[in-house]
Length: 178
Image 1 (cartoon, rainbow, N blue to C red):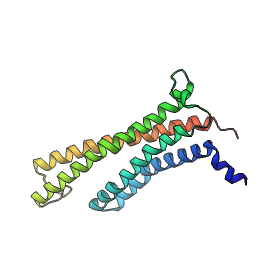
Image 2 (image 1 turned 120 degrees about the vertical axis):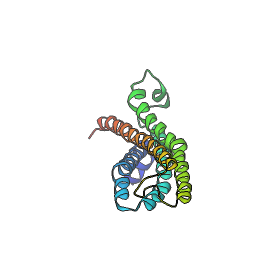
Image 3 (image 1 turned 180 degrees about the vertical axis):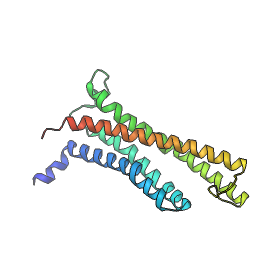
């Protein structure tokens, strides 16, 4: 059966890994997060993101490794050799994606969650939510500012990942023979 035989071809898995990675990154960055932010109350949006983002960052960390492992034409040596064109047009963009997702998974994401917990504690002390209208205490202003900075870093890392994956998609697309 010809269709089943394609499942033993590393190129098949490479294309599926790339499509899954780029699709997930694009969807999370430009569609899902935006729609959820607009549609859900802040506490529900926050709860959704706290559950969804670690899964997304894990997926975004595993799939670049799969891309390197299943590259259909380059050997591991050529992917790691700076004298190989594969190093610059394949390894670097994939490693940028991997690095940005690992930073979000292990450092920035947990830092964001920590600030959110601190903010909930502060909300309990003050008897009002961080997003309530009116003046904020100095402590809440500092927490909101820290959260904004850390969240901005996380968003920037996610954008870097999707751009690097897209750049590799351009390389991959030019190698297709139709």
